[in-house]
Amino acid sequence: MTTPHRTADFLVIRTALAAEAVDVAALHLRARSTYYPDGVPDDGTDWPAVWREAIARSDGRVLCAVRDGHLAGLASFRTPPNAPAGTVKLFQFHVDPGHWRTGTGTALHAACAQEWRASGLHTAVLDVHIDNRRAQSFYDRLGWTPGPAHPAAPDDHHLYLRCAVPGNHPGE
Image (cartoon, rainbow, N blue to C red; front, side, top):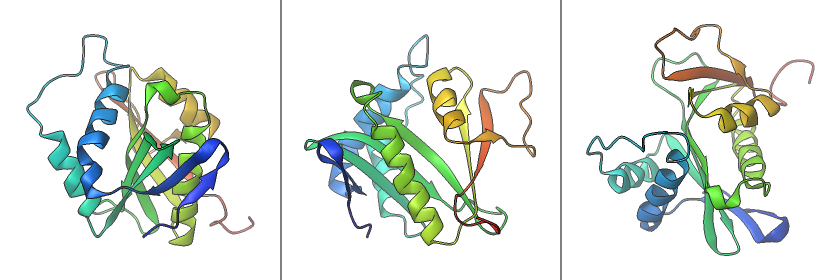
């Protein structure tokens, strides 16, 4: 279990709880709704069940950012199957739109990087929706770059990014 990270303005980063799956799914929907111009496609996914499963996984982590007692952000990561040694994938990273530009995302990302460092991981990867310019700018500021193994094709809906985990590389 992650030791909670306390930051200014009563922001706590901690492990998500299974009982929070409905709230996590609602935040996920609010965040995703901001970059789908025609609304989030309804593919019938039971998102609370998906989040309960992610929270319960023994091979992954779901962290949440809680600001003043309210869920403000979430991050889900694990080592993907067949990934090179030392690689972690950030599967989901969302900040509630009401908490944008408050430092919540930066603090949540820093907590993820701290966990990756502590686990000896050296490379993080993710994919970000092509229409999510806000997230692309956020990741760019944090040092994420296009993954050379996955160049974007004209019909891709996602960009594939990678980042060196600070502190886990020779010379750092």
